[in-house]
Image (cartoon, rainbow, N blue to C red; front, side, top):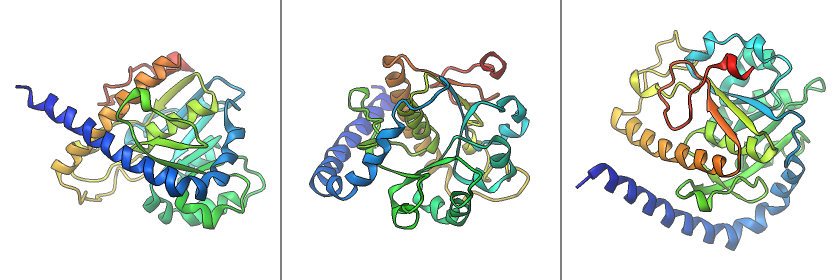
Length: 264
């Protein structure tokens, strides 16, 4: 008896049950509440002019990347990178935040960027930010409660109830596919946070910020995220979209690992 396979099947069953319950809530209540707002995302569908984008995670390996290589490229950033010099350097095409707690932490930074007239970055945000940022044209909002349990049920339509993830990076990949990118390259996706008992991002790797989550919680969460990446990658393959991980030393093995220089 393979206990790991049993746990994996139990996880899929749990996800399917939660998806069913979430669908009832969406079609019964939330669809009518959010449809007008999420329908505005229709103009993002296949809007990209370049066929390649670079999605920057916040892993410590990003400190070793020559950011100048990304000049003139379409870049997507996430979460708290908006508080760093990197954000100004890469001038991202899109910035994605789907964790409502992180959103609360950086709301002032987001508003400051949205008020700038010399910026064109589009912000893709959790629906909890609607009340504060709806007045800004460059703020877009997504609704996502579907868990990535099956490729057949995967939804990256930004006007509907999207497949969501525990980690922001696969969600950013999903958005990139909707926007029309055919080649999606991940950077700063170390997937190694569980290997150290302190928070490690490229912007705080030298600080000693101890993790409050237990190792058990980290590893249990990682197992879910890995299955989500697997579903995402299988969906991308079906659509003929190339998703690769150019993060040097990444522990993520669900996405093909490549060298950045081969994709510049």
